[in-house]
Length: 153
Image (tube, rainbow, N blue to C red; front, side, top):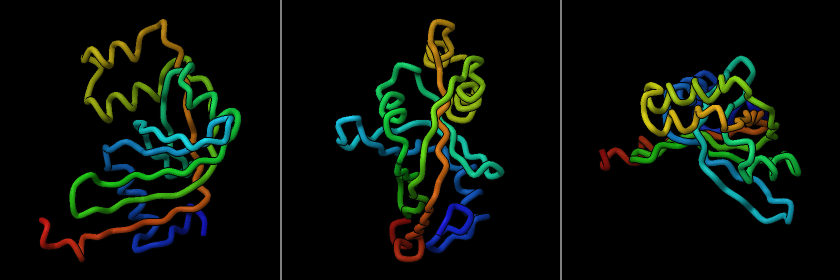
């Protein structure tokens, strides 16, 4: 099973639509250099052509060091309210500079709507070095509990 052929109830097309529309963070799991588990939440964008998730973070974030030491990851993107549904998987991550903060700008627009907030201004500060985390899924699984959770609506 690879990212182009997800297991579970959804087709690849449904996965693409969900990942493009959902504005919840990706929960990303990796290992530290000491081989401990580490999990964090990041804003993401989905590129169906490249079959990758892209996140942005500060160049000095712990996760950057962790991913450079070991690139295997697991991830989940799911709804926070019933009926629960989502996408989870595993793959590899790469880290590269985002000197112009292009990915970060797109993520700010996606999650905040514009760059006018204090948070957006702080994230886009010229003093802040930014990187892109590219997550290339190798296995993807979907789930959708809508049918069995009808009474929770």
